[in-house]
Image 1: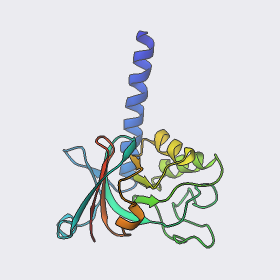
Image 2: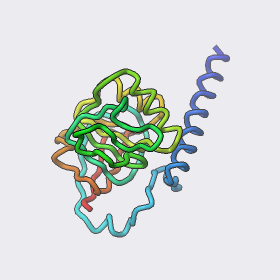
Image 3: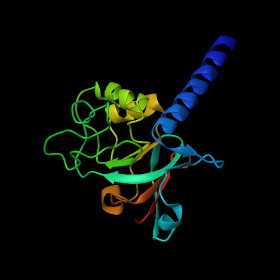
Length: 184
């Protein structure tokens, strides 16, 4: 029993250390409150209207950053270059855009189970999103969030694709199950 407690504590510390390393690589800094802040102009973000929406948290944690919104499902296998975080799927609405350091908002994942591995590679290189919002999560994206400890939420009271625009500042509170959107 004691060995299991120590192993679990070590795993938690490893995940926290890995997350800090990823955030540093992605250019994101932690602040004293424990909230993650991107390098965006906080004063400008506060001048917009604020919307708070409840949802179901999948991975706990609090993260704040710029939204990147897709009306189309995303495949991390083939659809995203894990070395750069750039969407490369032909015909995708985010083609050529990077998910690195963003709050990625999309309906759901699609594709192969190797998507979780591709997400992990992007995460290790600092090229993954810092938070995930899905209309309804599925297993591949959920696994990606869990193995990288990326805050994730879904099943919101309102459709996030109708409430969030690319460029909005979004906070995911996976500890309490809500998101907050500040209009860009």
